[in-house]
Length: 100
Image 1: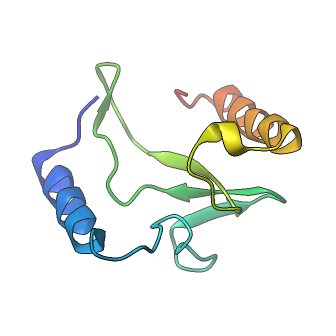
Image 2 (image 1 turned 90 degrees about the vertical axis):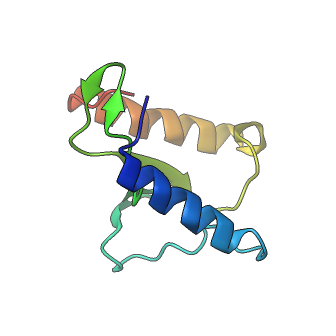
Protein backbone atom coordinates (compact mmCIF):
# COMPACT_ATOMS: atom_id res chain seq x y z
CA UNK A 1 0.00 0.00 0.00
CA UNK A 2 1.64 3.21 -1.17
CA UNK A 3 0.99 6.85 -1.85
CA UNK A 4 2.79 8.67 -4.63
CA UNK A 5 5.67 10.82 -3.42
CA UNK A 6 3.56 13.94 -4.02
CA UNK A 7 0.61 12.60 -1.97
CA UNK A 8 2.87 11.35 0.82
CA UNK A 9 4.65 14.71 1.14
CA UNK A 10 1.32 16.58 1.17
CA UNK A 11 -0.01 14.15 3.81
CA UNK A 12 3.04 14.60 6.04
CA UNK A 13 2.81 18.39 5.69
CA UNK A 14 -0.85 18.33 6.72
CA UNK A 15 -0.13 16.07 9.71
CA UNK A 16 2.70 18.34 10.84
CA UNK A 17 0.52 21.45 10.54
CA UNK A 18 -2.20 19.82 12.68
CA UNK A 19 0.20 18.43 15.29
CA UNK A 20 -0.09 21.53 17.44
CA UNK A 21 -3.89 21.68 17.23
CA UNK A 22 -6.49 19.30 18.54
CA UNK A 23 -8.90 19.46 15.62
CA UNK A 24 -9.71 16.07 14.16
CA UNK A 25 -9.34 16.18 10.36
CA UNK A 26 -12.44 14.00 10.00
CA UNK A 27 -14.62 16.09 12.31
CA UNK A 28 -13.67 19.13 10.23
CA UNK A 29 -15.19 17.67 7.04
CA UNK A 30 -18.46 19.26 6.02
CA UNK A 31 -21.06 18.35 3.44
CA UNK A 32 -20.71 20.63 0.44
CA UNK A 33 -16.93 20.94 0.60
CA UNK A 34 -16.51 18.60 -2.36
CA UNK A 35 -14.89 15.91 -0.24
CA UNK A 36 -18.06 14.40 1.25
CA UNK A 37 -19.69 11.94 -1.16
CA UNK A 38 -22.71 10.67 0.73
CA UNK A 39 -24.25 11.20 4.13
CA UNK A 40 -25.83 8.37 6.13
CA UNK A 41 -27.59 8.65 9.52
CA UNK A 42 -24.46 7.71 11.53
CA UNK A 43 -21.68 8.03 8.94
CA UNK A 44 -20.62 9.79 5.80
CA UNK A 45 -18.33 8.76 2.98
CA UNK A 46 -15.63 11.11 1.77
CA UNK A 47 -12.84 11.23 -0.78
CA UNK A 48 -9.38 10.99 0.74
CA UNK A 49 -7.34 14.12 -0.06
CA UNK A 50 -4.18 12.04 0.29
CA UNK A 51 -5.20 8.80 -1.42
CA UNK A 52 -3.21 5.65 -1.76
CA UNK A 53 -2.06 5.20 -5.35
CA UNK A 54 -1.45 1.46 -4.96
CA UNK A 55 -3.50 -1.01 -2.94
CA UNK A 56 -2.66 -4.70 -2.90
CA UNK A 57 -0.44 -4.14 -5.92
CA UNK A 58 -3.20 -2.54 -8.00
CA UNK A 59 -3.65 1.07 -9.11
CA UNK A 60 -6.25 2.98 -7.08
CA UNK A 61 -8.73 5.09 -9.03
CA UNK A 62 -10.71 6.38 -6.03
CA UNK A 63 -9.89 6.24 -2.30
CA UNK A 64 -13.04 6.61 -0.19
CA UNK A 65 -13.28 6.69 3.60
CA UNK A 66 -16.27 5.73 5.77
CA UNK A 67 -16.26 8.17 8.70
CA UNK A 68 -18.51 8.16 11.78
CA UNK A 69 -20.34 11.41 12.50
CA UNK A 70 -19.64 10.98 16.22
CA UNK A 71 -15.96 11.50 17.06
CA UNK A 72 -14.30 8.30 18.25
CA UNK A 73 -10.70 7.30 18.81
CA UNK A 74 -11.10 3.65 17.91
CA UNK A 75 -13.68 1.36 16.24
CA UNK A 76 -14.34 -0.40 19.56
CA UNK A 77 -16.11 2.79 20.65
CA UNK A 78 -18.83 2.33 18.02
CA UNK A 79 -22.23 1.32 19.33
CA UNK A 80 -23.66 -2.01 18.13
CA UNK A 81 -26.05 -0.02 15.90
CA UNK A 82 -23.13 1.95 14.40
CA UNK A 83 -21.10 -1.22 13.84
CA UNK A 84 -23.94 -2.72 11.84
CA UNK A 85 -24.43 0.50 9.87
CA UNK A 86 -20.70 0.64 9.14
CA UNK A 87 -20.64 -2.92 7.84
CA UNK A 88 -23.72 -2.26 5.70
CA UNK A 89 -21.96 0.71 4.07
CA UNK A 90 -18.77 -1.29 3.54
CA UNK A 91 -20.77 -4.18 2.06
CA UNK A 92 -22.52 -1.79 -0.34
CA UNK A 93 -19.17 -0.45 -1.59
CA UNK A 94 -17.81 -3.99 -1.85
CA UNK A 95 -20.81 -4.94 -3.99
CA UNK A 96 -20.07 -1.94 -6.24
CA UNK A 97 -16.59 -3.38 -6.86
CA UNK A 98 -14.50 -1.37 -4.40
CA UNK A 99 -11.61 -3.12 -2.68
CA UNK A 100 -12.30 -2.98 1.03
